[in-house]
Length: 340
Ligand SMILES: O=C(O)CCC(=O)C(=O)O
Ligand SMILES: [Fe+2]
Image 1 (cartoon, rainbow, N blue to C red):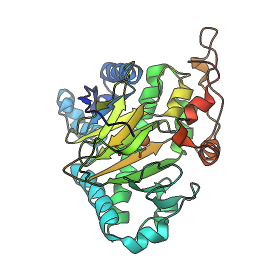
Image 2: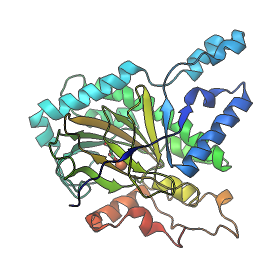
Image 3: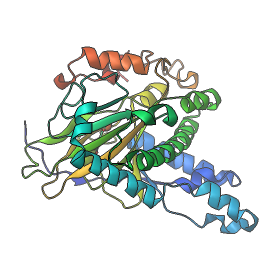
């Protein structure tokens, strides 16, 4: 493998999530949506600040309403809990890991160290379906004993953030959101919980090679730095900073399809750290297993002919099963009708 060169720190836009909830202050919402749209177009990724804001102060009668409705950045204790149980799972529960180990990419919960969609042996992962939670949580690990409770709490909260972000991203495109929001509400949430060991030669091997995620958006929680992206028009890898209390969000293949190429799915990879192990929790949000996703009608006209084939999550799984993705092939490339 070619050496992994040091990457510059990315300067990523930060979206104040509270801005999306200014239902009483439409100007703030539309400004936030505009910023979000710019971030999606120019970088394909951004970070969401999870801090509380006092923007309710101008609306004294509504302060309580604002605190309840706008302040649903995920709490620190929930994020910390998810990272802790992730680490405990990888470090302690060997029997359970063995029991969940599988190369069958259709399994709703599976553990892997190296398989068809994990082309590196420096990463262990647990992939699991997470929505509807009550349907899948009985299949999640039982150890550590608080895994289901803590990861389940995070799964619900991150999904709520994802639905609001997807709504706002679609709004930024000028797409009518009604039906799409309903479909996304019934859509898949797949969580990839990743563990990367400390590595004394991080310049020689990657934790996870370059890829894009198939969903509409991915929200990533990380214990420390290690994620790199190629955003915007550049072709250099940039390190995503670890901003305390912020979540990293990137655009996936299905948002590229929906937007007919206006927003591009982001190429990303994980590098290894010389002095510490790392866990990350990638929550991928999209449509249901058999929903065929196509460009939104508002995104297609004479100047912008349809650029992608329709496809579903099941088609993605078929593609992954049939394709050697280690040879540089990607799902989104397989959907392209023209060069977009
Ligand atoms: O661990 C990371 O930073 C990236 C994980 C990732 O890209 C994935 O699970 O799809
Ligand atoms: Fe990814």
